[in-house]
Amino acid sequence: RARNLTFKLVLLGDGRVGKTSLVLRYVNNVFSEKQETTVQASYLTKRLVIGGVPITLSIWDTAGQERFHALGPIYYRDADAALLVYDITDTDTFLRVRKWVKELQQMASKDIVMVIAANKSDLIRSKNYDIQGAESYATTIGAKLFLTSAKSGTGINDVFLDIAARLLQK
Ligand code: GTP
Image (cartoon, rainbow, N blue to C red; front, side):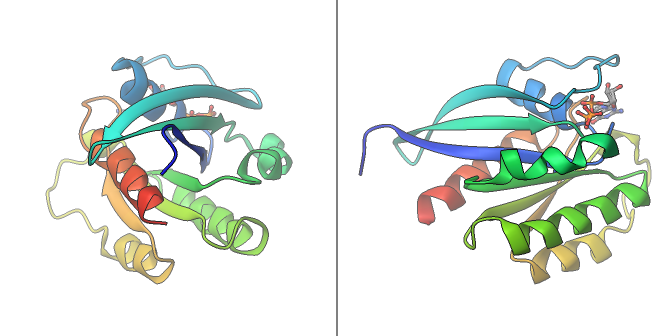
C-alpha cells in the first residue's frame, strides 16, 4: 500500500442540519450554537490512523441551501465517500438525503461509500424515537446510519471511523 492514502469525502444535506458542525466537532472538537451558514463549500483535512494505516481525509463541507444545489457535482465528482446528513427532528431534511442519494447513484462513482448521519440526536428525548424507517432505507442503499450530535459529540468518531474503515476495504 501507498504510505499516505488520501480519500475525498463530501458532506451533503439540507441547510442547517449540522454538516459544518459535524466536521468542526470531528476535526477541532468544537461546537458553536451560532454556526454560520456555509456559502458554496469549505475544505478541511483530517489525518487519522486506522488499523495501523495512516490515512488523510480531504473533507468538502458543502452548502445545504437549495440555491447551491447545482454546485453539488463539483464536490461529489471523484468523491470516494459521501456523508449524508439530516436533522433527526425534521423529516423534510430526510427527503433531501434521499434526493442526494438518487443523484449520487446516477452521477457519482459507482463504488462511492455512503454513510447517513441522523444529527441533532441531543434534541430527542424519548429513547425509542423511531429511526427504523431511516435505518432500513440506509440498508437498501448499502449505507450505515449513525445517530450523531455535533453538540454533545455523540456518534461523531464512529461515523468517520466507519467511513475510513470502509474506504480501506475498497
Ligand atoms: P448550511 O451551511 O446552511 O448547509 O448548514 P449546516 O448543515 O452546515 O449546519 P450548521 O453546522 O451550520 O448548523 C446549523 C445550526 O444547527 C447551528 O445553529 C448549529 O449550532 C446547530 N446544530 C448543529 N449540529 C447540532 C446538534 O447536533 N445539536 C443541536 N442541538 N444543534 C446543532
